[in-house]
Amino acid sequence: MQAATLRDAPTLLPRINGQTAKRDYGEDSVKRTPLNRTLAKQHPESVFGSPFDIVDELLFTKGEKLGTLNRWRQSILEELSASGEGMRTHGVSSERAGLLSQIEEAKGRLSAGPA
Image (cartoon, rainbow, N blue to C red):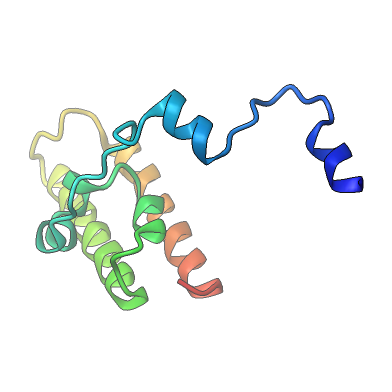
């Protein structure tokens, strides 16, 4: 009886089960595009929205995730180095520096837990 009481308890959140999800959102509501693993590893910024998306990627091993984050980090360091040598970077150095700290945090998350 306890389970029925909890199931019928008032809530502000919608109640979603398999039937309502299919009816309300349709099977095609979330389309996952296939991951181009080579492109994702070599040019992660063009595939992932943030370094934390790499941490959450299910199709990469922990080693692939770390390697991809390191490649992304290296490309930013090269870009920042170029800006220091007088090449135009369109004033995004502070944004890129922030991205470097996100990459370091993502690497820390991978090192701290299972992935």
